[in-house]
Length: 67
Image 1 (cartoon, rainbow, N blue to C red):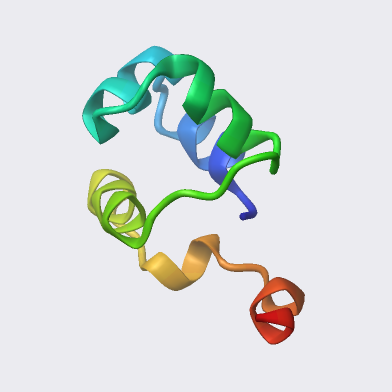
Image 2 (cartoon, rainbow, N blue to C red):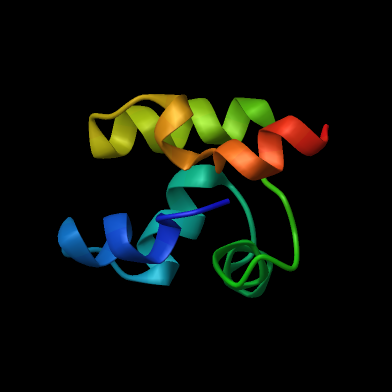
């Protein structure tokens, strides 16, 4: 995943607020921001709606090619 932290800060949100919006623990969301855990597609959709962007904005092209 890319841009998670950048988009969160750009929108003036805390990890706590984003994790609550996604229905997950803040510590779990932190792992996602640091690339140690992946978000489910459902949570990516929720995040895209929150930030007003596309799910594709979170996908690194090199990462997508690997899968």
